[in-house]
Amino acid sequence: MVVLKLLMKAEMENVTEVTTGPDFQWFFTIQCGNCSELREGVGITQEEKAAMSGSRGSAHLVQKCKLCSRECSVDVVDKGLAPYNAEHAGSFSPICSFECRGCTLVKWEPRGGFSCRGATSGKRFEDIDLQDEWCDYDEDADAPVSISHVEGELQRA
Image 1 (cartoon, rainbow, N blue to C red):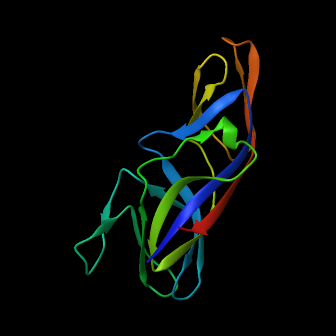
Image 2: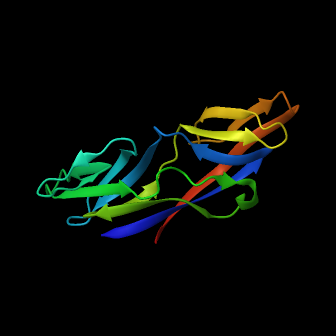
């Protein structure tokens, strides 16, 4: 069992925090711990749990390797995203942890489902896709808002 921390880094303009909702889905490239096969775009939803075969336990993701048929599981340790705040902008900050059994998370793939708040107005922006640069306009503050250069790093906890 390995626990990995996901650290996020982003540039933010006129935004105070980046968060997720309760039905958020994380996307990763996962590597089998037995045969090293890579699977891209694997989604982990923290609201759903699946039973692990041969065990009484469950995890947020349970899957068999397509190459060697070994089962692996990933569990979201932190229930939700620790907000990525404006003071962290431009540097890596931990946002979530994952317990991996039989596999390793290799790369985080940021996608949609994020939300943020305008720095001046506090206006909430929903369903932000961070695959590319996100830009909008905060009419309440009469200012542009953006999140760009999003990166992820996985470290042992």
